[in-house]
Length: 248
Length: 261
Image: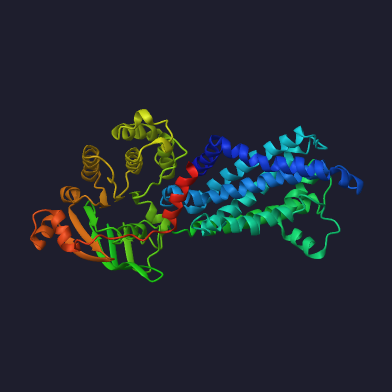
């Protein structure tokens, strides 16, 4: 417990101390919200979709969480370079608890980031349908954060330096985001896109957030919750396996 | 306490450690000497579970560190050759994390941290971020951190590099004291030969992955017919200057410097 807490706290301290990282990572969601939300709003309305900003808000919150979570996971590479990773790897605690501690820390950071993006959506005019569902939304945000931090940690465990990072961003993180239905409804999509969305874990996250924040859902909240949890457990297991195999 | 038999580490065709065998007895201070790139750090990494050996057998406190990693980690402490501090945290926080990782009892930890930070004269800087520290200060902090818990075996990979003679003496007398009082086994590498001469009970010299000499400092001097250990070392390893292979990690460190400014 003490080890988990210590490593969790470390991630939080690092986050709150780097103000530039905090503010920098808010620029992108804001741009999506304003640029896409207000830009596509009128067309979306004309097509009969309703309020695009409300539709987009859960997607952009998910985006904020996704990026922060992956980055938190990828921090393993930085720690490897700065040398701190070695300090944890030779410690007399199981590598699973080290991985879990830092992943929980990273997931907490990503959830906080998600909350900040949520507050931003309120500023530009988004209003959730039900206040009662907000705690549920918070739980879902944390699960999304945990899922992708674990994935980031697993990926980072296999990489020696940041060379492979672009590859991960362009071929994994970006598609995960763009094909998750964060920006468009998943109904009536062409077959292949619809298939990808079905195996994209973020699609279930976005859907669950939409279900709790604006009351519409594609898969249904129960399915979302189940699929998200299974993905999270899988990536936690995979991440800790890869992490425990690190050699320096 | 430490035993290596026929140990080999082969990095895709580059043999860093080539069939070496040695033994370190319990309570001994053992120096592992060699030019740059000789295989010292690789050997330490294998002993401390960070690398798996290609072949050969290892034993540390009766445990095989290649197979029983978690158990092996309970018996040693290590001060690394390259930095392993968290720059974004303060000196005190770095010490605290170490204490938690090594299960130093909470009620004991703050007293221990204070004692050690005072010992390396960093107590008045305890709340400063490590990124503001000079190289020597970071080194002192790493050593203090490595001594927070008292392991059965302490590995020191070039611990005193970049420290002035005062600090080196200071730190070695502390370690020798621990060695006497608690019977802690010490396994260290260094490029300062007079340091090895003064503190080591026994020495092994490694070059290009092979152990080329073993014995007490006196035995090595007699064997090579030289007056001091530095001459003995040069007689054993020759006078050519070695280059170390630059890996991805070093390149990354350069990049990091670029990013910082």
